[in-house]
Length: 211
Image (cartoon, rainbow, N blue to C red; front, side, top):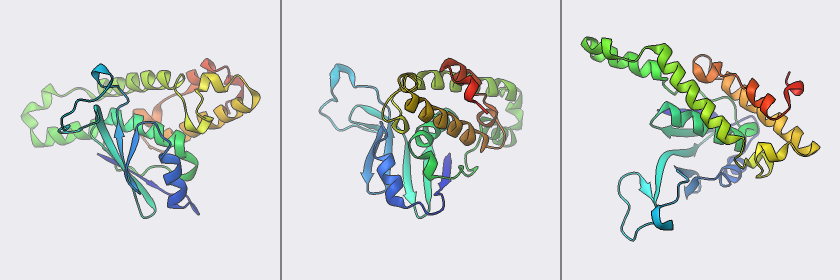
């Protein structure tokens, strides 16, 4: 499944490249192409001496790919959970340079609907849409809770909890939270678009600044 982010008016590829080159886990494989790798360290502290097969590189799993083509940033992942996570990474790093993603990603419900059409006899075994929504919401909750303690490029490499300790940092965190909400709302429908970021504002003590 894929996502397409049109570049905002007047934004150059160079500006986007500079931002994405700084994203932890994005390994440049060319001037306009990155492999998105898991940040887990290989067992024993280093990768083995043999050639990595499949989707593993340097002891880390390739979670997806990111590529600049013309005036669009193309993202490819193989699950809705990874799509939600990479959207957060890209939004935090270059959200001000991109427009809302095109709805090229298929939701969990759409994928399951396709399967039902292909194999109607198995429809009874499919996970109900409300359960799929809950799974996605739980994933987003866990992801954003971890994000509060993770270094964010848009916050100068500080975590949101660290950044709110200064007045200047608080302003950056407020802008970052608004960006997350705007990006999420751009999905139209589904658990990503419906996600409520209110608890993050409260967690960071910024609830009075949410408009």
